[in-house]
Image 1 (cartoon, chains in turn orange, green, red, purple):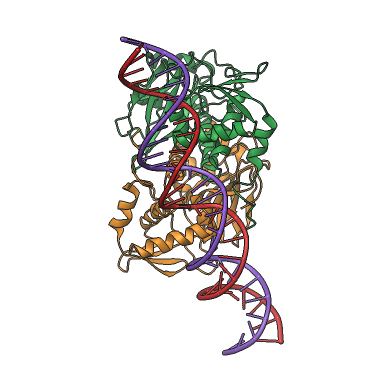
Image 2 (image 1 turned 180 degrees about the vertical axis):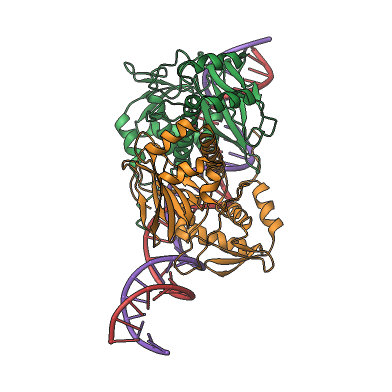
Amino acid sequence: MMRRSSRLEDNSESAPAEAAPSKSSPKIRGRLIEKTDDRSLPIGNLLTGHEQDELRRIAKLVEYPRAGMTIFSAGSDADFVYVIDEGMVRISRHAESGQRHILAFMGPGDLFGVPDGGIYANTSETVCATKLYRFRWKSLRDIMAKEPELQLSFLAKLAFDFRQAQRQMVILGQQTTYQRLALFLLDLLRNSQLFDHSRSRLKLPVNRFDLADYLGMTREAAARAFARLEEEKLIRRIGSHEIEILNIRGLNHLKRGRPRKTLRTR
Amino acid sequence: MMRRSSRLEDNSESAPAEAAPSKSSPKIRGRLIEKTDDRSLPIGNLLTGHEQDELRRIAKLVEYPRAGMTIFSAGSDADFVYVIDEGMVRISRHAESGQRHILAFMGPGDLFGVPDGGIYANTSETVCATKLYRFRWKSLRDIMAKEPELQLSFLAKLAFDFRQAQRQMVILGQQTTYQRLALFLLDLLRNSQLFDHSRSRLKLPVNRFDLADYLGMTREAAARAFARLEEEKLIRRIGSHEIEILNIRGLNHLKRGRPRKTLRTR
DNA sequence: CGCCGACTTGACACCAATCAAGATAAGTGG
DNA sequence: CCACTTATCTTGATTGGTGTCAAGTCGGCG
């Protein structure tokens, strides 16, 4: 919505998506977007080998007990970098028009808050109760300067987030609302924390607000997109935060279909 | 493009945009996006200090004499990483629907072709005659493992591109076609190679095809957006690749205005 | 001069943003 | 436990924007 802008260039971070269980929904820790590497040890996978000890020295565990808490705001001085231990965070920014845009949902093991010119480019808020490892950026930089391996994992994380951003650009740029929603649901399906294969039930970790701002549409459009997918027997709504998947192949087929009418042959 | 603003602490890099002179337009080497640092030595700014020698050892200068040549395609094995010496390149990807989407325009000094799991995630094509420094990824990785400084500049480049991608996400997600176009033009204005302050003339380095695919619209929508800006006395079209800027403040005001009708107050 | 590509304009239909209102669920206090 | 309030989600009606199809213009090049 609205809000204004921000304009800072960018910052932040990255990637995947996860979502936030609203208060009503059960607490969910799953990641929206699947990654190939194991995330069982949030810090662990960031640091391989003995660098981990170095990192732990400067890490501080901080807790945010409720949803909707601000971790940092766009434009403020960026002293810290964070790695999620538990919970979920949304990275957002406001366009000059005031519209909020959610760039990514981050889950356990994800890193965010990389400074851009000394300040944060994005805003970061909890989406549920969350525990974070906090690193002073200066200290982290010093360690990285001595530990090429650590830098490489850092680089890999950044590269992954970058790819996610590019993927999201393509999604935002060219699909209809229900196609974007279908893509989003397909991403969620890959998360075993959210998708119960045996019953074909999928938990939706984000509310309609965040969903709409992430997919570049309004709440109403999101609701209508759900309605349309239901009409076409692809899904069945159980509650606002849970659906039953009726036809995965149908959902997959959607994203291959022509965006609107015919395929442009440029 | 986008701006490249300035804001990276260190160095910079990457991403943004430049454009391609179409065959009809005069050859343009300027960067779409202005950078603060001198680019006389494209490789130079990637490497500070003696790492430059190491890099030059494994660098090979390759030339692509014409526009529209493919440097690499998405999905192919990624053996090389490139740094632009001269010219312009567009980084694109195709959605499952078949639509092309241009993720970024890259100019001198920009780095691209970072592999993702051993293959290229995007396609890269020349937008005009171009000279590139080519690095074997394996070799570059070996050097980086020994040179933390080099890794840092690499990281900074990646971080900059990432921020650009995030900025583009916000643009794509929420503006109308003429607002997106206005933003694009404002970015171009920052490039002195393209904008003649004294006459208020701006050269458009990209054709309507690339423009539309970069801003997430059709050629027709792009043409109509130009027409609308002209109706509102903000610009005047001189040719399809050159315009006169009549009201910069008006253009700036556009991006702050409400996207469509009223400001949503969520 | 005629072809051909790039660009522009028009007509039309459809989608989605908006505005408004209702339905459902959650939280609060008695 | 129920009444009330509030937030969230859904549905409906309207309108404007933009994709699509089609036609026309402009400019370069043979």
